[in-house]
Length: 630
Image 1 (cartoon, rainbow, N blue to C red):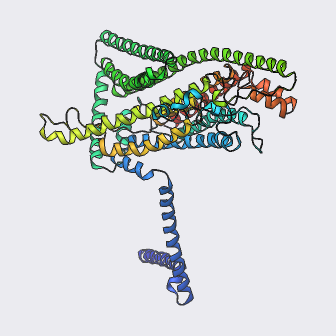
Image 2: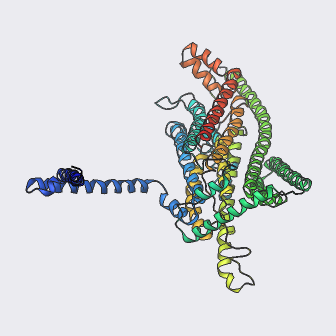
Image 3: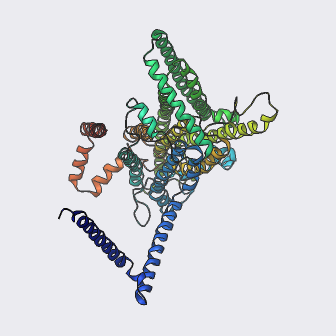
């Protein structure tokens, strides 16, 4: 029996092998039954295979079509393949900003501009829609229109053009209420979109760990950018990774080495003092030129030069160009790690832009207070003249039926309309920023690249490797410029409804202009950084600018008196009286009580604090989950 055991085992193995092969053959026959058969079965199988292949091809083509429908996707991918994801992140952010402004333009154009154009009074029918007689001679001059004077000042671009009637047209459209609600809706929609984008970026995650945890492991396994398709950029990325490893090793060695701590602290304190002096000086300079512009406004235009008329915009744009390189030069004294130095540089540029913007606003609102005093005197003089007219008419004609005085709209006495003046300042500032940005790219990048390209053959040193070399794309500066430009749009859209449309055109042209400039004038960064860590940082700055932009508009609506002869809120004590009037006339009485409780600052402030605490707790919980998972 023991002699037959190997034979029996071999026979059992063969039986199992035969059984397995039979099962495999059955599965093959079931799967390809149509192909193995004849007649209708074979043709049906061939038809199914053909349809399956066509379906796969259709899905692939449809995915390509969806990708092609994304605006500027090919341009961004081309930039990404040559310069890496860090530079492409700026253009993705620019496209996101364009989509946001397109929706805001739809709100403003569809709910404010179009109703006024279609259902409001025509141009020339009332003083607020008519150029004054004294300005008609130069109302169509290019220099006047370029400064948003003349016919531009009395057009749909600005606040003063819109009528204050409660309802207009056959549809009884409530334009003043719509104007106010759209002003709030712009901020509400922007807040929703920004917070939703931040939440999505947080859920997608990024690099995972903190900067100081597992430095060499993260550099080893997550440093490469797989979207790079250009050989030069790949070489730069390879060198960047090598340099980052060397820097990390040096950092570890520096942490164990003694240094002159007192000298380092003194230099850092000195650098911060110099930067604070620069910030204070820039703020004072802006305040000074805005006050000078108030004096220029009282003078005749023929006595002023082009620089005098555009001094405020020129100074603000010049400070935005000069101060960031100055901060970078001063930062050399601090001797920070490049990563820490970049964060300090971003924070200082942010403080510069924010300080300049709020200094501009404070000086502007000082001018508004002066115009409000002028409006009160003009309003009192107008009311006195009307009373005298009615008294003289009654005494002369001996009648109680008093027709209104017939005055041509171009000859009517009118106030300064401070809302339109504020809107004009924001328009000029935006246009000036566009001009400076485009000229900087043209001169600083394009002409510089031409000089390096054609003069390199006959120069004393290598211009490409040494000074001035080709320019690199400034990611942080351009992103911060976009953020503060959007802050100006949020603040100025309430006073100039056409400002959102101009910004849409600006972003549209910037996409093509800067893509061309990057591909033709710039070279890849010597140190290519990944952009995933910066997404929510930039969104956080945008959210902060959103809240800071909301405060001047809230101050205007709740505190300042609207102009008495222009704009949708003329004739009211405060702009928010439109909402109170609507609640009193059109809604049940209990809605007024609810609105009174909701608008109480004692409830608004705790609600805001509660919302902030919820956001903080949610971020802390997510951070703890990440730490637990790692």
